[in-house]
Amino acid sequence: MKELIDNLKSQIIEALNLEDLTVADIDENAPLFGDDGLGLDSIDALEIIVLLEKNYGIRLANAAEGKDIFKSVATIADYVSKNRKK
Image (cartoon, rainbow, N blue to C red):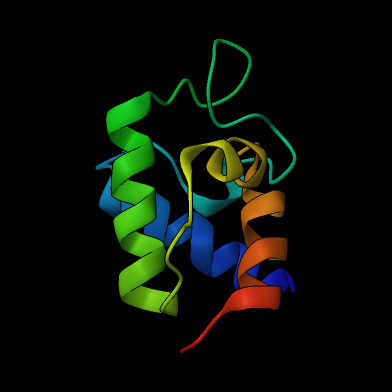
């Protein structure tokens, strides 16, 4: 699971052009959206959805589901580990 979390952090940094961050800078339990965490927005969420589909074969069924999945890197990793197709 640690490897998956680190891979996701790296992929998020690359997909969202967060060059000023490293994998170690991102707390896997910190919120991804809002002022408390990385401060991502809805466009960033779309980028993450594309990333999950491309790298793990995961397609989100609805936006409400995404809200719970995208709370943190740890919640994304948990979802990926249970639902990955690649």
